[in-house]
Length: 293
Length: 237
Image: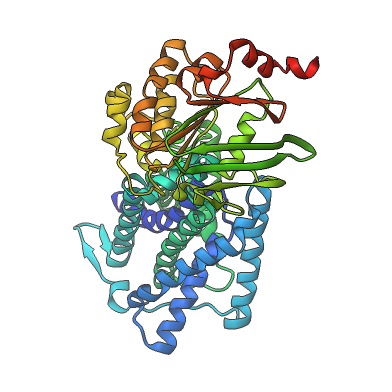
């Protein structure tokens, strides 16, 4: 039992990392980014190319992948998504859906449908034993720590910096934000750049943890959505808790409910979460979250 | 004194509806101009055009002699135009302090700091960490004005400061106008409360359904004259 919870918490770190960027984009611009998972897969392929052709180690690729994803985010926002804003929720939703389809197919054309992985060496199967059956794998631990660090960093940025205040101001009242001198288009560009930089981290860690292909994005998107929704939309620390809750539930189900087994644990977990949302539609911290970013 | 703001023969509106039919307003550095007029006279539209929220269909706006055609709202803040919008539009989830700080997002060089704003509006002193959404109307208006000042504007545009506020609060807020002027800021205010406007302004411009019906210094204008311009009685006759 203890082990299941520990493993679930560790797994939640990756979900939270995925979800942080989704949460930021939604919080600032009210855009639901359906291409989120596919952008993470894109980051994974970027890392794969760097490892395969340039000879980087997987963790070293972060130095390139994170800034490149940031630039892609800025370009995507200024070149596409900004033009979809201002006429309801549907246009940005459709645009991100389109981006997802384009990404999947470009990745398949370029890399074929084969599954790839990033080999980070010893860290992947070494662990710290805590006595008994409980052991903490280094890789999940590092992932969780990075997830916490990313969310803490985003929170600090939102709370303490002028850029963060501008994000929250624009989230409150976009027109009033331009009145105080904020260039909305540029600000949104920064928001997506930062979000995709976190997606870059998530994509590389995903690639180290498991194999991925051009169409793996969708399932990652589901996990990220779940984490965001359990935690309460647009609440970053809630997203971390949401990711951890999701991780623990999935792990416990897979281990202890014999009839469910490992293939059905995901659908059952999602059903449980749907039922939870019937009781608490706002998520865990939905009601408390006065701050929506 | 040099001209700070020139609004030249501006026509503007929303879709088919033209709200301003060729309005000209000139404002010298250091002067306070009150634009008065009844509901729908085009006062707020004029401020929107000056702040760049609405593009004129003809005519132009110039700041310090430089035309602002195509300069967007956020760029005008950096040029020195700060708008305190109708309805205050304080950011509800940001604290008072954060509202003020974000007001300095595109600030010019100048004297205004959070501390200076609090000295100007002492009612904010113990509310700096309170969210903007949990303030009284008067406190929100003080925050909105302070937020505008944080940009160190050359020209401060005040839209309906008195709207929905108790007379004593309005008096208090307008009472600080001289100190704002002392800091080197020129003020253009739009007001339905004519008495208040006449009390604080060097010059008054009365709008009537999209045109300037009367203009002059309050001391040179008779009450009857202002009343007739305000309600358009000369035109009707």
